[in-house]
Image (cartoon, rainbow, N blue to C red):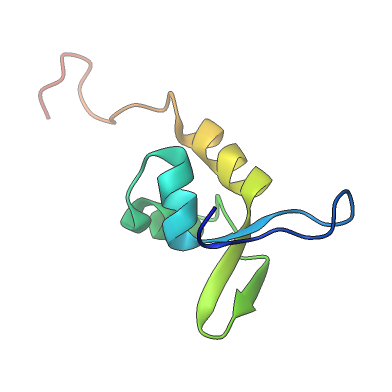
Length: 78
């Protein structure tokens, strides 16, 4: 997978870039940055200037976000 840094088998989690995290979860990179901003996702490391995220944390952030829906009036008109 481009943008990922797998550790040795069984010893460390797979780290992915924000772009790869977005591709894995079907969202935009801006959404991944928003998860970080909201505290739903935390960088596990860096490669140069690029933040790296644990793939399992990315999926957890997606699950936490999924189902929240839009906030606003129940009839869908804000």
